[in-house]
Length: 553
Image (cartoon, rainbow, N blue to C red):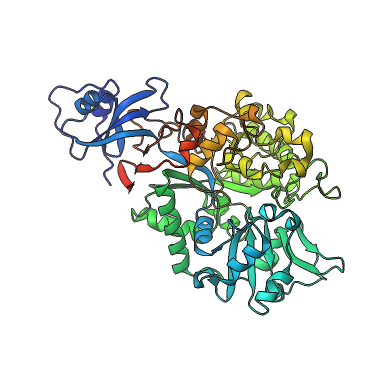
């Protein structure tokens, strides 16, 4: 992949003119489209961009681009809209590969459908002799089934084979008796700090484990082989490129996954930009702390992620007051505030940006306290709260005041809206998924999907942000419509905002001379196109550092 470009050419390109006597630029390409949305305030709309050496050398009319890149190949994209490279600010690459490689349960709308899918699980769903699945969500089942399932349903199908099925949010698992036996988990096993073993009236484990209790069973699952890890990651990366992602913030990688990405990057085999966050807890955490940040070609390790709490769907999100639909429970804190602050300081001192997963209002308050203090100690460290899903209204302005980035996922709102109010009540839900309020308060906003929890397609996130509706257009006018944002604001959160959240705003996030040539050509304008068309939009090109890494039909 070519890397060098002439400084003189960049100076020239800024005004879309050519220096006298300049020679032709070998390998340059001019992309011509119906519209180029640059997100550059100096020239927000154009018709063409010129690319050379992995950089943008000109943005303007077709004639201006050709003048700046003499002899360039011309790529005609009639009817297309080019936008800056789309970035997912919170995702899980290995998780996406696993979700696409094991029995997928996300489409099931009843307990019976889940069990039938598990019964017909393909051979690829086995890890060792364990049957692995992902994606069930009891909130999507028939109304009379919207409670957590038990091991007994799985035991009828698999009396001996250990079965472990991860909930859609990744914060709960459903295991059969075979899995519990392998893990030596019994009624005497105590709930670990930050975890919950659901039990029946007799005190026996039901088979559902929440947050840190997951490790009690998951630690017994045979690890992925090297071949499996490579296959899963490759499939995930290819899918990202197909949906128009040029960059992914991988929120909590383990050391084996990072090592593989590092090898691919060194060999020039990583076509997707990956901004990796080290997992802040677990076997890899200490190794990452000792290694420190890493900066490669398309791979960067500069952040660390901690989990402050669980998820609302499994009632693990830490709330200030009890759950409206479980008055005896306030959720789970996975760290004490003191522990979180100590770990955050350790990683920050080594040069890591600190990101904290916080969903409930109590977890978000604690995260703001810790990260605000950290930013004051080390100005410019750009701490992040991942999800910022349920906020006290009084905490909304603190994001700007404390200089904490809000890294949010629009499709969480449209997935959770059928049951979110039941969890927290009419008053508290007003502080949920509050993108517009955060923007108006001056916060930096970065959008993602949290895939595989949600679909990786960033256009679905833009649709959700613009409409606050599901893909059927429900509810009319949108759920809590005052929090809808414009198409340009939504696109900016997937581009400019994501770049800022990864310290890359001087290189990526907009289309301007001197910036990395990362962009996507789409069949629909994400800003002004009909929102309903976004779900049907096609990606025509995905370009990273000037290289076409995906060419659509």
